[in-house]
Image (cartoon, rainbow, N blue to C red):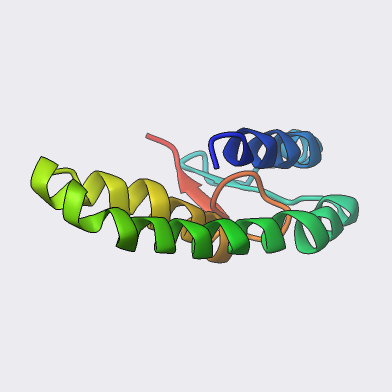
Length: 106
């Protein structure tokens, strides 16, 4: 799984970088990504299924490692890294976007 995340991240960045060039809105506090069709198609057919598999595998790994992470006090960090982050990338992110659909800029 250590190799899986960088590969998926590289895929998302290579597919989504053209979308960053077209992003923008009238409100300077928000960035709205508007990805092209090929980025959406690549995300739908390649990235989302891989991220769904990563979420399922991460959930299994989290459950198996739960007794040990509880002893070490890192349950929240392990849960975030193994379950929440892949699930967020799978279900919260807009289709073809690199990040979440609406990101607030500070």
